[in-house]
Length: 69
Image 1 (tube, rainbow, N blue to C red):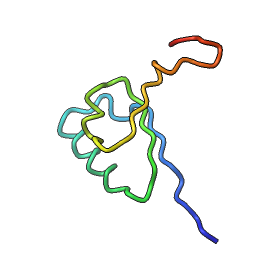
Image 2 (image 1 turned 180 degrees about the vertical axis):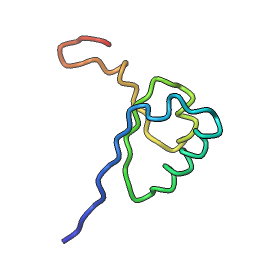
Image 3 (image 1 turned 90 degrees about the vertical axis):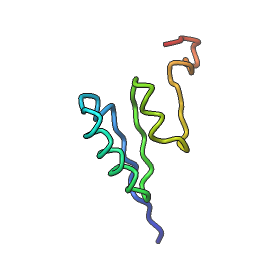
Image 4 (image 1 turned 135 degrees about the vertical axis):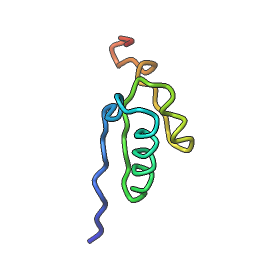
């Protein structure tokens, strides 16, 4: 039987960190290669940490009823 690690879901967990602590946490998150992680944030600078990641801007998606966030 094959298994897979659970994904890690984070909702702006480091929003109040200074640059040094944020840099340390990003290195720690990067070391979790076996996990998929989903990171929600409103801070544009965070995409610079994961240049190979898939970025989905949910405010551009809307929904099936046509509502736009």
